[in-house]
Image 1 (cartoon, rainbow, N blue to C red):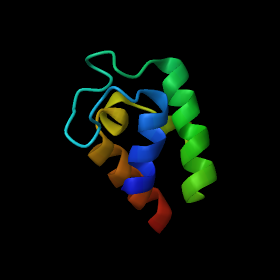
Image 2: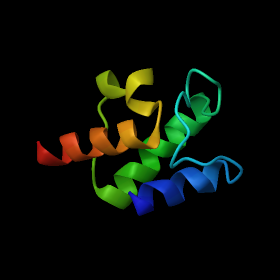
Image 3: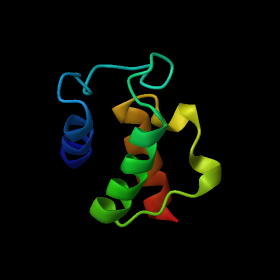
Image 4: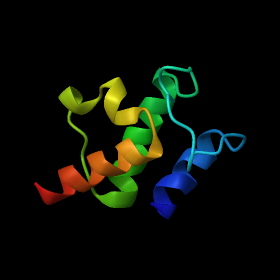
Length: 75
């Protein structure tokens, strides 16, 4: 989770990603952030996020993103 938080902090250092939810709903992350996240997650975790998984529920908090990474890493 620390690596993911570091990636998120690189995008928006002013946000407490450990506790903040509603990242998409509240406009914390925009489409450019999502593209950057997908690339960074692939580079850092070796996990490729398929297009069908790029939905708000998977990107709405650090916890949901980590759950996505873990689920994809199992496949």
